[in-house]
Amino acid sequence: MAQKTAIQAAIDLTAGAAGGTACVLVGQPFDTAKVKMQTFPNLYKGLTDCMVKTYTQLGFRGFYKGTAPALLANIAENSVLFMSYGFCQKVVRAALGLNQNAMLSDLQNAAAGSFAAAFASLALCPTELVKCRLQAMHEMQISGNIAKGQNTVWSVVKSILQKEGPLGLYQGLTSTLLREVPGYFFFFGGYELGRSFFVSEGKSKDELGVLPLVVSGGFGGVALWLIVFPVDCIKSRIQVMSMSGKQTGFMKTFANVVKNEGVFALYSGLKPTLIRAFPANGALFVAYEYSRKLMMKHFNPQE
Image (tube, rainbow, N blue to C red; front, top):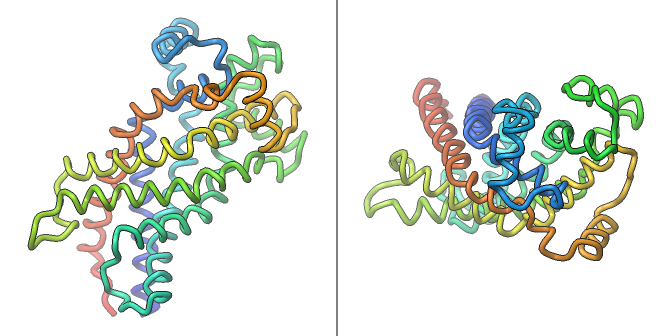
């Protein structure tokens, strides 16, 4: 039993890493636009303006600023997330007195995903901090908040460690948890609800093809971002603005944004995020489900 559990955990972790990689490669340009618009809403009139200015100023490579930490962030997050998701599903079954092989309802899967997100946040926060700072580096430099030269992963990490110590890598952890825990309830809930919609009578969710998985994953991604986007906006502000030495907590940052810029500033960057949600999260779940199936078939863990 212990060997089976260990193999399943390793399979979930590896499949989650595959999903995270696919998600970044497909969605990074829109994620870059999202972070830029969240942290410097006054510099851009909208998504098209942000895309054009980014390309004019930095070229095509500008859309992939922060890709290395984004890959690391998504691989770390999704590896831990999906491994924890499998574990939390077992916890939910045990708590409800169900057999460990029993199928969970969409709501029960959503609850398991929410619990799993708390563990994933600890892996995600440091790498996403570096990613957000790299993505907004150009705007921070032209606004005079920081000097030029801090434009590599190592320079950003080194600066954080020198100024704030190891705990500085967890700037924005509270807002990350506030985003992830409720967000992944709707993420996994939306995904499982989508799969339930597409599955036909007499078949299982595991038999669904690529297109239903893409649509279900996209639905889950849209559900997540519609619910938690204001929290994500505050998280990005905290992580980017702390680069210039401005240390503010979640509630203070939230109050300042609403007071000085209005409620709609909390939704700056929502459009590229929703556009990104379908292809990126669709790719994530296709890569996860198919790589997991392949590994389960190969290793076939037995009791």
